[in-house]
Amino acid sequence: MVRPYAMTQGRVAPSGGEFDLLAFVVASAPDTPLPASMQPEHHAIVGAAWEPTSVVELASKLDLAIGVVRVFLGDLRSAGFISLYEPPAASQPHDVDVLKAVVNGLRAL
Image: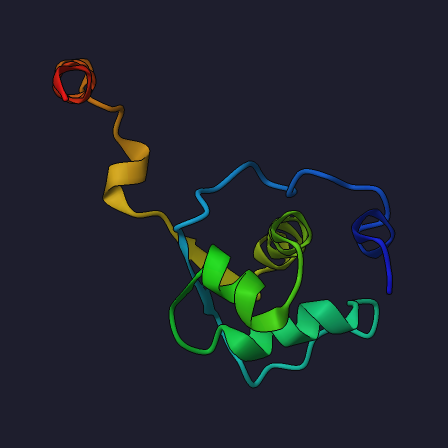
């Protein structure tokens, strides 16, 4: 068993900025060979993302920690091998009035 920090060489954040766990991952060109410098997990991610898959589903399919997958997705996105599509709800702030109504409703129970 390899520790997650060893797989990512100590990196804990994806390059190129954060992204939502529900973002969809799609391989840009699944048949394009990756450079030899990429790790086997990079190859597995590109192979599993030939159709749109969320980040959490990808981590589950590959049996990898979500932090490791996020770091590797950042590498692949920077190199242009994948595209990430954020769900619209993730980019919009939450409506405070709706959240207050939910909390008040839960308290009333």
